[in-house]
Amino acid sequence: MSCRDVLNVVRAAAQGGAGRPRPGGQAVVRQACAAALAATTLAVLSGCVTATVQEVREAGTGISADEAIVVLGRKHKTRGETETGFVDCVSRQVSGEDLGVMSEQAFVDATFPWFEPRTAPLDVRDLAEVIAHPLLAERIREIGVRYLVWIEGSTVRSSETGTVNCTMVSGGIPACFGFLSWENDSNYEASVWDVEHGIHVGRLSSEAVGTSFIPALVVPIPIIARVRQSACKALSEQLRAFLSSEA
Amino acid sequence: MPTPLVEPLPIAVGLRFDDTMRQYVHEEDLDTFGKFRIELGSTQVPVFERVFAALFERIEVVDSVETPAASVDAIIAPSVEELQFSIPGQTRSGFFEVWIKYKIDVYHPSGELLGSWPLPAYGKSNSQNLGFMDGGQSQGLNDATIWALRDAAAHVAFYFPIAPEIKALAAAVEAAEASG
Figure: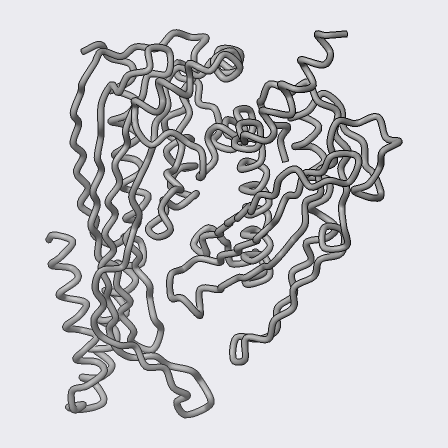
């Protein structure tokens, strides 16, 4: 049974529990038990997520033990800024014994004011010009950063259907009924720049779509699709492979 | 605030901070969104001191723009002209945003105005970066204000040394030192 099949089963159970006329006491109990069983099963599952990554390589890569990378979020746009959490997630997941990662904040502090939203280079031509500045070139050599990874994109809620209504039933016990689902879309692109040579070495993109849902038969059970985390994991794995392999 | 990575100009400057730099407070009642208060005064003076200390060979804080007795080549007098902000509830953008309009005047120690620059600064804070326990609106506005101060510092560090009046002043000081 696929993730989407499970979703349909639960949606049907929740809608039946909430809206259909009740045939009789025994039937109601059986229905409630079935729904509770389904809900319990789903509680150990997360929502459905599909993630895809793409890669375009423009030059060879490779990194030595004394070099590091830094992952930066694009902040020059007024809207659609990449979430700090995503940048931190990629930094964490890419980091390993064989690949040093400098934190975004440590890098922009060490190079202040050259990589602020107002002053950061927007393309490779700007980067080549910026890193040619003797003070900055020396600082980058000191901190050992070889590659800059610029990430653009965000995660948005693209659609939402259904409702969950909660009320007090007899005895003052709260109870919720209904079915709520929504879809999140993650769309991120990482541009990789070689600081040593001042060139653009490639571009990777990660897209993830996932449906989260909350079936509620007395107790609401949120089943959340970890869309942003999936996009982060897929992009990080691709980025590690991209940086450590030659063209 | 990190120290800017810049080559210092061979100029000694006096810094004069007026009341807007030392005590600026912005209070605004946004009706259904509540009342807001942003205190700039206590934070911005050290930021500007640090930036100008990196930009120039020597700085000293002076009380007036007319200080002929001071051993400096120019007096720099920043001031706050205006502050505006918005919260996600107003713009539906998910961002806290702060705009600060500074003005930087440069005086000869005799008190003559040599030049005046508008310095717009902008900072934003993504509400999605704030956790459940992060204090909501006050934390968001505080973060946006810090980013605006950082933007002002970046602007000064990046563009002030290449302003024609400052370049001319540096050239004049260097020429005077070379001639004896």
